Image 1: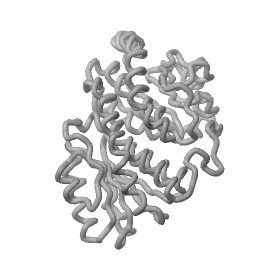
Image 2: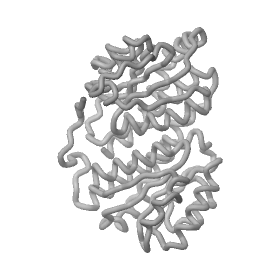
Image 3: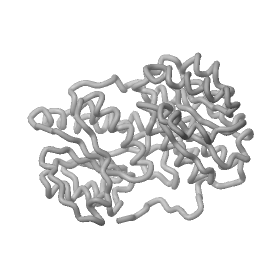
Length: 339
């Protein structure tokens, strides 16, 4: 897991270069299409990357995005009219049965279909109208890391193809390499959390998907019961679970979500919670008992990939500190097939 976390700058750079021609072609194709809806279908970490994709596409392209419920198709056999929809399957392996069933059904309903996968020879890549590849090499860790960030990178490129514009992503590999430099800081932090059994992870907007992803990583590698919330939603009831020394991990970039992060930190301080912030905001770092600080120059729209890196490191190193093996989580396998 740690080795694959370290591969991310190279994976991102390679993916960006190799897939750019496909997105240029897709951009021209979308110019002549009336797409009223984007539907994304995924499970696990891929679903968390898709949550980020939903925010990005809606903000950038102004097209509503739905995260599909595969059971609607696979268990209830519903027939949806997707003739003016773009349907995007997201899967590291490309072998999730339910994801592929949704893609096949969508294609039969008239949708244009895309596959975002790490496996060019997968079933999903063959089903979709276009396969968009993550150039990560084989991912051996059960806990996805480099393919998760690769999927998010694809959503940047897809949003730009749909909208004809988007943030400049060329510095993301560099920012990701900078984030890897925090490994020694993370190693110093994890001993404090060795006995952690429960926690909350919060993030908002561009980093909402990351809150789900870190919670998943803590559950699968550290066996910590981790809930995840928008920093706004956390005020609507869940705040009641916080007591003295209760662990809260926050994704807190600069930008439009900064004020809500600061408001939550103030309230958590009153409750004497144990807050760890992943941030590039000096104000958030100053108000957090503990923080992992990234460069201030990282724009909020570019923050999700570099911000998830210290979170991945935290989960992997905490697992080791707990005497567990993050590369062999109990009860799990790399490819999970559900219908």
